[in-house]
Length: 161
Image 1 (cartoon, helix red, strand yellow):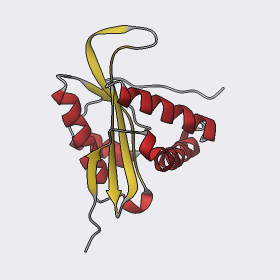
Image 2: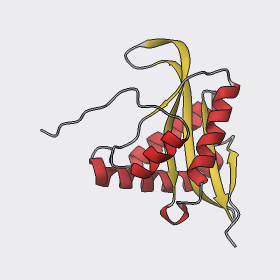
Image 3: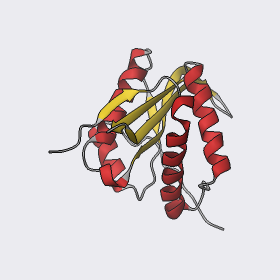
Image 4: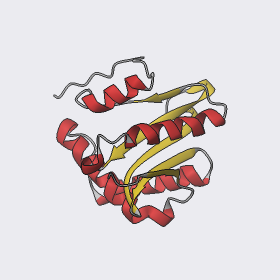
């Protein structure tokens, strides 16, 4: 029998900061091995924790966690905003910033459940558009997002000099 996985919204990042920091570091490490961009460091993890904590506390962010036997095995973090560093939009947009499931728990539909929960929370706020980005090499995530009816809207190009 498979382990029971519980997916729920987390109302306080601070209460789970240590577990979330470890998961974020694993996510950043996997991404760094592919793209060599975001450094999986304690200072970056702390920066992410602060941003997530502030976003959730101010009501402009959602943190969805997946638990198995009281251990956090995955998380999805999303924000809602109308203003971005270089421009503003007519309507608020949801952004799914991070989706991560521990490797040993992948393939069980956990990511799909977390993203679906996140989309429901965003939709309940009256938000009509959600965006995300995914590494081109992350075929499993791309497949998941396509199954959830995400469409390619733009391409981000990168060149190493």
